[in-house]
Image (tube, rainbow over all chains, first blue to last red; front, side, top):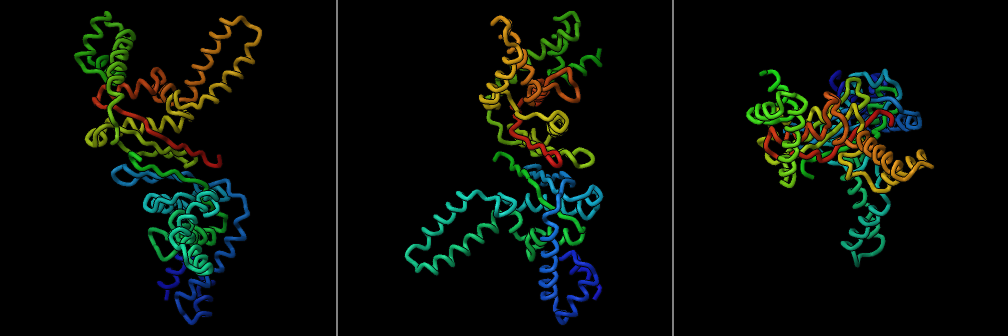
Length: 192
Length: 192
């Protein structure tokens, strides 16, 4: 039982009491409890997302061999949180993830509209001749797939593909009690 | 005598025989010998600067405290040189220098023409009313000063302000016998 609580804490960043409650409310069904806690966590994270995050750290990850490197800035609200091991681990994990998963943007809202339009054009070409509602359904699916490939927050987290990077950050917000924002990153590949 | 040779070797990357020759040709005057070796080194580096540099490493430097970080890619011609301690030290030194000296461009040729024009306008305003030849002289000096502030290659090297970063790189080219190119860098300051 303790292992399960620990696991859910790692995955969602929720408090122990919340986890126990979520488990009992969901007949100890792990997946349902996670779903429940994520929704609560996202809600809390959403409430904190307006708060000013000016502190944080700049961190780097160089992949062994020195052919891929990432520089990242992640913000939180206080220097106190920025110095915690939890925050440092989160930032390091994000840098390693970016090295592996090569996101082009942080959020889907960062994609320039003309890029989305161009993607849509390509997909439309691929599904030409099908009825409109089918086309729209397929387009929707393809765009959401494109977001998952191109946007850091929508990507499956490299270390644990069961969650999105967004969930990792929401979990950190819940655990640390502060707004946490990935501000920017640079990713260099040798010779590219 | 050996210390002097070693120092000149560090500063210019020239061979020991060349250094002995430069000293004897310049009556053991250290400054003149350096000047002499630099010119020869720059000549050699110039000859190598057309050669393709596709290898190298991506490296990072995070200043203690995590508020400033630099990601840099430096190219050389072979993986063999990229793996040497000399090359790694050069790249690390460049990353630390960039963290400290905040260059905006790598070479003066990377500055967009409109930026140079704008700088010139500001300087012209400052020296209005003076004769044309005086104005041109002052403008030249101010622009070269601007290059020294804004361009990595023209900046005095942070660890040894007696030389420019350009000299550090030329010295490395001479020592390693390969073209060495600073390809790109990113510099993040927390909250900027």
